[in-house]
Length: 233
Image (cartoon, rainbow, N blue to C red; front, side):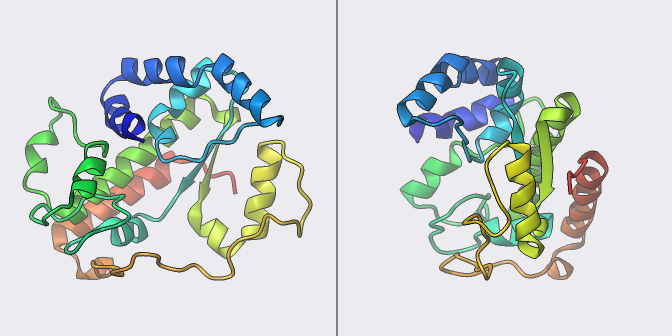
């Protein structure tokens, strides 16, 4: 976990770092050994980190395939933003003035942020948590879109809302795309109810309650991903 945490932000900032991470930790030889140890035919890795190194995995491993699941930006921001109290699932950026526990500080070390020489870096210090997490959502999903643009036949992008509304078709598509044995009605089923697992609940209201600048940034980010992503279903 410590290594992956630090590599996540390093891979975002540097293509060479992403390339080295895959070469040293996800090479075809290493994957083949893992498959052999597990006595299986395929290895499926589910990780947020893969958005940062997915392009290199696809480049270095011609047999690899990737499924990118994109959640609605507003829903992501509301779920990922903590304004007070300890966040046990600190995916997103907290309020800039929120006191952090050691665990929160550690995980924040690996969360992507604008690179030093970017134009946005100067604006970052003035942004609140909502604006920062809109940026986080946009940048992460742009990486998935970039992988799809180059390796379209091996990258499928799906809306998380499809999983919520039609889990049977969602799983059937994933099984077909990844060449997995699957029959309709098998054990691959969605939870009967989506539950917010944040112990303190959502601490950010619906988008219409956000500041005008945040609402504008939300619409820009949404439009960009909708125009760029080519959803499979």
